[in-house]
Length: 560
Image (cartoon, rainbow, N blue to C red; front, side, top):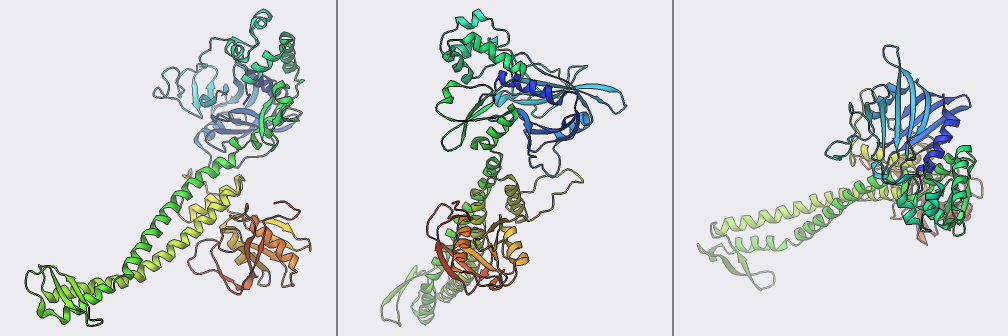
């Protein structure tokens, strides 16, 4: 990732041109390492996004609002207290480093004007966002506190005087002379070791250039004048590989190039599209781990219950021992560890183990008691096995939804569902805040014939579609014995053609665990034949009178 000192400088110039003298309206913290600041300017409202995540630290403007938690986090509340209503009076870069400083003038509780500084340190795993008091130079707080246990060199804690990150033994790119630049070898690694504030990609570009000095001056002039050509380089699959504010020869010929009008547009596109930094996949990863762990426990429980049932089903010998002992009490002598008796069912000889401490009658009663327990166990464990299988089916359906989406809203809906069903702990909420009320928003498609098709995005939405929204005469579809979404064709009882059924079934197959398979079986039945058993998990239903078709997963329009 090429968010180096040169990119940070370009971003500072973009910020200066856009939000200088702007007023901070709102502060949000979507995640523990992210901030979104709404700023009112003469040219309109802008949303400034900052992340200090180790793999995707950056600062830029965004157009889409991230999903915010139901209750603001502690650092967000602190920034609202100190910065909300403040005016941005200065924006600077610290030297040639990836450190961006925004100075803000605001009023304190007594109505006096005070100055604060919000510092964004974009330094990989050491990235941070820090609020300081300009008059004292002390840290008010940071999004990531760093104690002496974490770093003996530099602590970031409230009350300490803020210190910049230690300087590297390099020449800052803003200060390097033409002679020093020309003297560097035509190799990217020595240039990277000698010049501070540049990325490996830009170092390689300087190494390739015969006109290194003039190119370097041109790059700095372009940043100053904001006459840049921000671009994102994509591979054949459309996945971003790199971005920069200037053309990079190494990528120009080997990748697809997408240019942007401003740096923020390029950064927003790059990080939204890049899988490794996709917020939705990060959120889904945590839930997937929780669901997988719960499933592993359920699979183990199923195995043990099945073994217990099999063992209990092989308990006829216990009844036989009891009967034969009762009929042959006279053969048992005190102290005997076993007795041989004739099986009056088939004439064979049976050896019956005995407890030497018990009488023959007590031994017989013991075998009858064990036989009775075994028969009771079969009934009880069959019930437990059925309940356990229901939980497995439910969790497998949730896992299929997580595998098929990276949409943050859908993932949050799945988290809410798992909280309600007790598989995930509820997040701690600050006093007075409640979780946002769930609003169903199913996928919607249109068949060739014009009928509307609705698809649940999670199990709660499946219940809503099937049990509340759908009419009794609408058609219901679901993949056969495969986790997936409930699909409703809103036909109102009209007879669907074969093409309608196959199109809707293809949609059902696409929104299931079998999305990447072929020839997927899909059941279809009128909604009136679908029922939900009492106490069943969300999305779990039973149905009768169904018919089945086999289709390849696809969406209307040929998407598959």
